[in-house]
Length: 293
Image (cartoon, rainbow, N blue to C red; front, side, top):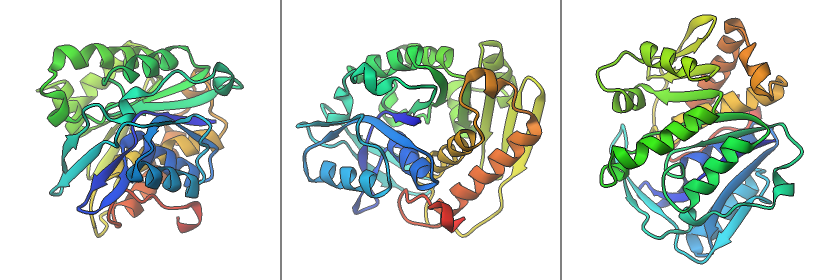
């Protein structure tokens, strides 16, 4: 099963729509036909009810999804490319607890995490422990949000980033992520460092192309221009496309991931680019279903 772990929130675009990087990726995976669960905490307020209904309608398994009485985190989305202003102090998503171990059994799984959940305590410790111990592939998308990391500082964020890098086999970052994490360095050099640290595949996404970097070398897939309504959820949908393809192709373990040839990565990435290309033609994070591709 694919398990996405982290926050669920509402994006104000300007009306409230369900969002949050890991939740968007869960929706994308499930709509593409992959067995998918969301591991996170969802509020019992009206926004939380809307998130729950959205996950359920998309076919996401909710056995790992917890309900909390705290309010839902809200993200004001401004401009395109979007900037995010978060209202998330003491919100439900921060308080995810360790699930019943039986619900995490039966692997191997594809675990995906990133964005806010990786560094906001107390839930960050829970998610990092799961990433470090789960049977299967760990996929990591830092999906950097400088507006919320800033007040905490890199000294807080970097150790959480390092824990997830140490646990992951698959790393996806946008060109903006790479520029923020490693200022003034070429993404290809940074990808080489990630490979040296044990990552099997690095995906560098930009508006015009996606570069896949593995021990075999690198491969580039061009991104076709499409009419853009907004870019919220584009990267999350891309990750969902990649994960759904890995699951469908039977690539469920770190060892299997390490043997994927660049030619196959081109096909996987092209599929994911198509998924993201449909998402950006809609307002809000609204990934396509398989029959829309």
